[in-house]
Image (tube, rainbow, N blue to C red; front, side, top):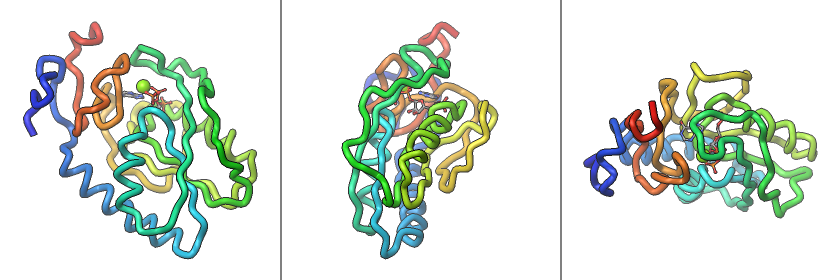
Length: 186
Ligand SMILES: O=P(O)(O)OC[C@H]1O[C@H](OP(=O)(O)OP(=O)(O)O)[C@H](O)[C@@H]1O
Ligand code: HPA
Ligand SMILES: [Mg+2]
């Protein structure tokens, strides 16, 4: 995959994880998740907007019958640092009481979004509540979170692509890359 395939080459510094690596990892995670939820009623919850790509591809890699719902929260705005203030922009349509709920995330960075989500959804009495994330930045963690399934641990650098944005751009890149510092004034 050429960095400049979508004509964004000058904005990108490097490709961190290729489309092929993402596909292989999601297949691996899906097999583990299938094994965990066999015979259970599974609801996967995508955290908009970043998790759209992971939700779409992971859901298709899973064999377990499932339902999907979405929550929109935002803590980043247009910057590269979490504000720490999580806002619900759209709540779930579904009552999750007694359901097996799997939160699907694109990235755990400071962990503030997920920590807030786990306590919010946990208070709705689901039968179980777990998390799968494609990416995690261990060196950026501000809160410790127990995450059952992690695709890739990555360095503490701002990344874009495969759902991840900078100022709402680059979400449609099929790979995960690092942004050139000049783009965000670094
Ligand atoms: O661990 P944290 O530091 O909280 O960061 C992770 C969260 O930040 C991003 O969402 P964002 O708030 O940017 O909204 P978006 O998904 O619409 O881009 C990402 O999709 C995660 O939900
Ligand atoms: O590294 C990141 N890139 C894009 N969005 C994000 N949200 C949290 N961390 C990131
Ligand atoms: Mg964002």
